[in-house]
Length: 138
Length: 134
Image (cartoon, rainbow over all chains, first blue to last red; front, side, top):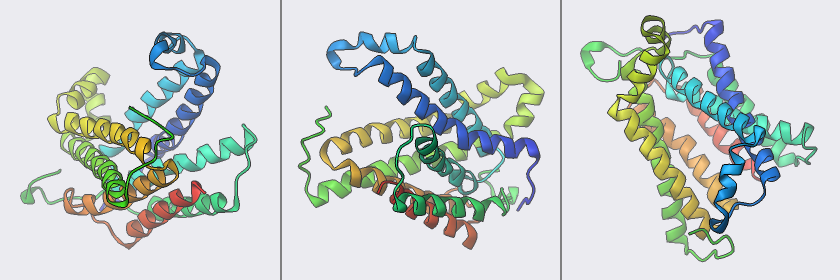
């Protein structure tokens, strides 16, 4: 198993952690400005596409998918997935400090558990090396 | 059709819907990860063939496209589920099951070395996601 990641690859994992949650929050913020979309008013979706918050949110989500795929090309799924879960923590913290929402004790406990989970795998090997003679994934 | 206030599924339908969401999400993750493993390091491909070459390599993979299809099915299954099951149950239960299911599937199908550290991470994330919804 490989044990080291370069700084650039840690930055890609950081992008995986941040872009999905920031993208979701930007989309939510933008859609609140646009207003509720119903089947009878699908034209509002076009209006949404001109909202800068929505556009930035979509770009963030595209960035997430690109960085997620890049990470999966050199790291195990079970190494990368906890990073994506860390996005839940980012959303909770942004909700607390940007949107001034209240976070319950249970949610703080959930944040602590996810941080611990990410910490467990972050210090470990990133990729299982397979013997090519056994065929398959490599 | 999503009818948020029409929560009427029995326990069997509820868990069948939740398991469908989790199973298709796991299939999407595993197929995508398997495809990326076969394609190889995208950093290397991009250095040799540029960004266009890397995008071409990903989009020409049938396994990747099947993975994206599974993710889409999972997304629409979730929409269907939350129209029949309380969101406070459906969202955390499917996310937690997906977290654990991915660890099992990665070990079985991708032959990843899921050691004790990774099992613990999957369990912690599973419990953490559940608590975040409280």
